[in-house]
Amino acid sequence: MNIAPDSSGAPVLFGFPEITFFLVEIGKGTMKMRNKQRKSPALNFDAGYRCSLCFILWSLVGFGLIIFFVSVKHQEDSGQTHIYFSRLPTTRELEDVEEEHFRLPPPHKVNPRAVKRRGTRKQPKVIEDYLDESSAVHAMFFPDQRTAVDPRKGGNDSMYFYPGRVWLDTDGKPIQAHGGGIMYDQKTTRFYWYGENKDGPTYQAHSKGAQRVDIIGVSCYSSKNLWSWTHEGIVLPGEPNNVTHDLHKSKVLERPKVVYNDHTGKYVMWMHVDDANYTKASVGVAVSNSPIGPFKYLYSFRPQGFESRDMTIFKDDDGTAYVFYSSRDNTELHVSPLTKDYLHITAAMKRILIRRHREAPAVFKLQGTYYMITSGCSGWAPNRALAHAANSIMGPWETLGNPSVGGNRFFRLTTFLSQSTFVLPLPDLPGTFIFLADRWNPSNLRDSRYIWLPLFIGGLADEPLDYSFGFPLWSRVSIYWHRKWRLPEGWREGYN
Ligand code: DGJ
Image (cartoon, rainbow, N blue to C red; front, side, top):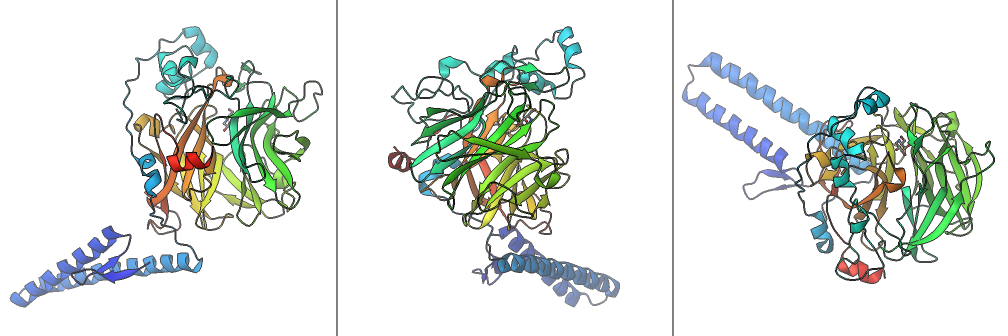
């Protein structure tokens, strides 16, 4: 942290104008007190009182400064500068705060029999309406096929992302890659999007169970430009017959993520495998020689014996990959490095975000700092995202606050009616990321939509932090709402 005098000779803490202002103001206040003392020496009691006040104030300032410098020193010792301010001119318009005004239709009249079936209400009424496929609120956020994003059509809409609309592949079929992740493959210079194919009927296995579809498998789509996606098929299918198989259609396969292993030359997929009641709570591993499969399913296990539900994989710059998973009834997350071949976990494990009840982790990195977006735990219903940051991937992880920017309050409290699944760093645009999320449609899961939005890191985090004595020592993570957006022209030209 730099300290320099401003034009008046007062010290300025770069990046912390509020703190500088506070110090200068306190300084001025004490000066005034001293002058008054000189003018009225008779007011001894008052002067003594002022003196102690002055002493207390300066002690507080001193104490604050010591803590501040200790924190900064600690950050510097770890070789990191956390506050990132850069804004690329080419991506500036993606950081515009766009408001979205809509009037929600009046509450849906509920069929009393449906209430009886559903039991007591757990969600706010508006979320209940939103989740109900027959309501007008639902229709607002699940526009029908007529507004679909279609890469086969050229014209003015080409390359525009429309969060929440039906998104067609190059065959004109709705993309089926939910809870997914994207891998850029250097060999083929293409992006591969892997996700859950949920193109089957939604049903409840038990009256109290979550809505589900049978496992069809993991779909893979490929693209040069991230907008026009070609279906490469189901690269890891569900098992139709053998009921004892982890991927038997009656079970659960969620959030598949693929990473390329530079040592073995293999593509390795990790996923959440479970039974219909979510009690198996394990990770599954599959492997392939090609990004478009077929993937060979290997096994499932509980990492270090702990439950593992929502999960993700992050491959670091040095080639080490890590698994993050929600554990202990989703009350905390665990992070564990994978073995060199990415087929197992190592003995190391750290518990992070303990008692925070977070899931749907999406991890990314900028300039040596690790970031993560998570959601709360409310089944298929949307809730408020949180951003987190860490110096070391193994923690401690700090919570930075709600990353959703723009839209309106309802959108910001529901992550634009979606749940995180992945954050993609854009090659050749350092510091620019795409936030990938699912807008789940629990009554018809195959019709769940994708919310892709630009994500940037910069400015000061806005929530008091656990380990920095309340000083904002980290950059803010911001996901900017856009009804319609596209990547900068220069990038689009390079990736076509
Ligand atoms: C929330 C998880 O994030 C999803 O992947 C899925 O498991 C649903 N819960 C099921 O209710």
